Length: 132
Image (cartoon, rainbow, N blue to C red):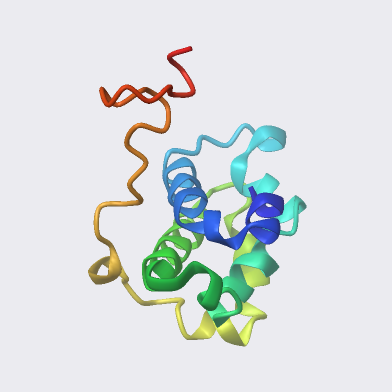
């Protein structure tokens, strides 16, 4: 996900939304823990750059919502019993995180990115990814 967002920041609305949902539903199995993987693949520095505004121009109008979802995902990840403390140390070392740490960002959230018809034809006659 991190590599896709770095190469194509315009995918951030969908990918950060997915990351937020996955982290909130994460059940740590130590090695296959999503929080552990987020730290291993250097997603934390990327997400902090995203929060800093490095991709706002590419993300455009969805930048505030993407940031809110990234904050929610990181806050949820910090609650992971096995790896949350380690993640918290990484985040606490960042001056960017200090601006977001204790804030709720629900007022930035709409309903998530609209991807209707992406996986199915959506009834419009267009071929979807899962229908053919």
